[in-house]
View 1 (cartoon, rainbow, N blue to C red):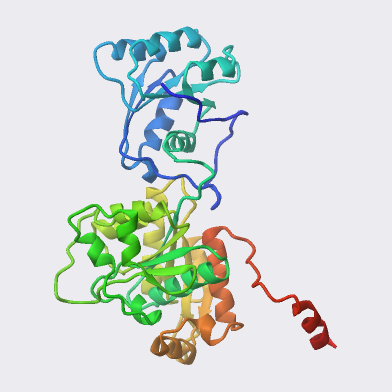
View 2: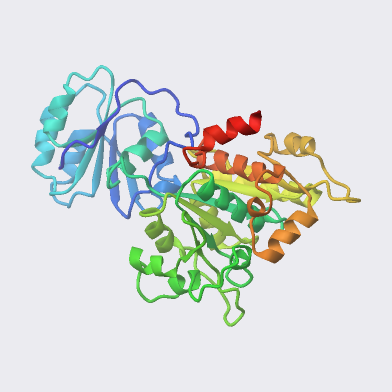
Length: 422
């Protein structure tokens, strides 16, 4: 067993969906065995096993506390993590001493206790308890406790993955993704990477006016697992804070990908990049479902018509069900107010989906057409346009950043500002 990792202090109530800043890094491929004394805790652990952040972990539950764990490991190796529940009826300190005699080196122990535990926390730490949680626990407590054991450091920022997908083809989801990523990098000053996952028809290279020789396909079809230096060589620099992992946009091969095709790339980028924006194509396959369910935040882009309304509702419902411990996915309306087109207004979406869109981006064929043809972002054409401000608003909501960093001016800026005011 190893040293103390972190502590939960007070009794914890029901935990709502986490705030965007409450980031939990996914756990690696580890084995976790829980020994529970109450059915309530066992149910919380089983529910946590379905969480996306424990998707690589193998988690099992067995009824019984520390005595059951000691008996179980007399003849078999111990897993990477042991979770023990104590309800105060047994001597947990003596139990931990006995467990240490059958515990393999490197195994980490997490204790779920109660506010009435007689054992001092300091004594638990001395016996090698890695984490101590005061119950009653909820699934998110289990997820956070296990995942934190394998974080390199809680002070190090780990990359947040934001997935943007269209509710229907041709709704402008890629344009939204690229402009939001631009706002995250430029206005929020977060180092970001855009990954174009539409390998055959991706437009990120065109939108950013880049034509890199390498990109996402080189990482996918590489025989070696992509490491940080390899992925860095594939990135095309767009701005100081924004890089692009471009799609080949080529039909030379068929891109039939496995469900876990992008896992290694995402894991590598998470270690070095604070924000990763995924431009997800409108299709439904094993890998697109995995990408969406595994993202930290999701934005569905829809046009104001019936097919988009139906698809948006279906996608949001499925993603909410698949991610019960995460913030609900968000959606926005795009190309609103197209002349001569019958539309469903935002009120119709709110009534059906039971949540409002985070933005309604107006139709502006001239503005968006000029940007697309010139390989520019909307902010580059008109920094103060209302659509530019909408992209910044979306960027703030997806990243949880309430305020933007003002551009640094010269020491004469205040004087010039006063003279202009006069």
